[in-house]
Amino acid sequence: MLLEAARAARAAGDLGTAIAQQSVAIEMLRQGTNPLALAHALRHRADMLIGASRAAEAESDCAQALWFYAQVPDAPPLDIANAVRCAACQAEAVGDVAGAIDLWRDARTRYAKLSDVFEAMTGSAANPGVAEATMRIEALGGE
Image (cartoon, helix red, strand yellow):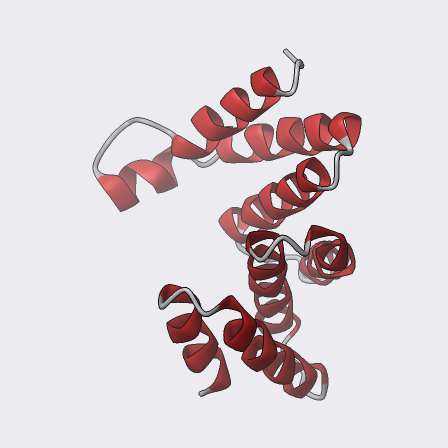
């Protein structure tokens, strides 16, 4: 329920409430045994913190999300790519250009392996993950 309430608050543009609700949900998930759910919740809180101009606070959530995903051998590759994307956004938001470029490259590589997933989701051969990562890398002065 808390995750749904956080999602609704985020969709309504109330990031403060969304972050607070997501934080309570994360603490509850820490008591459980579902590392994928915890990783997903951490990634979404990081996204919210970045959106609320609190990117420095999102660094540990990004790192923890990636760590939890790494603990699950069959973690969904799209979820991992999205977590790397989140870490790239966080690095970019705090001015870590080199780190952001490295993370965007990693995200691009991961998204490139998921073209069939994107096509199934959208009905298009376009891969928005690769397109975004490439655009962000170029905007940061990378290649």
